[in-house]
Amino acid sequence: MPISSVRIAATACVAATLLLAACQRHENIESINRDPARFHDREVTVAGRVVNAFNVMGVGAFEIDDGTGRLWVYSKNYGVPGEEEKAVVTGTIQQGFSIAGRNFATILVQSRPRR
Image (cartoon, rainbow, N blue to C red):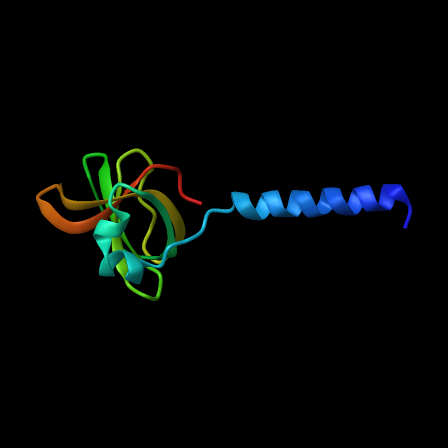
């Protein structure tokens, strides 16, 4: 194999490794709900379908279902998706959270725009 082919193959392998390492892993909601203290104040990403949503004076929340469980997401600066939309959400897990008079034992506080 010519040296240029080896370099191209090595470069492609390194690029693929870096790309895969940059992809954020999705946590399943069942794991978060089972042990929220393990995820407390840690940034996580979840993906699923929006099953409930509300918006009060510019502050919103929506519930996401990934097939293993459901989790509420607090969205202050990122808007609220419509019900039945698919969403990938990144944020930090908080416990004992209150929004517009509603209390949530465990919630994901969104820290990045949805994908």
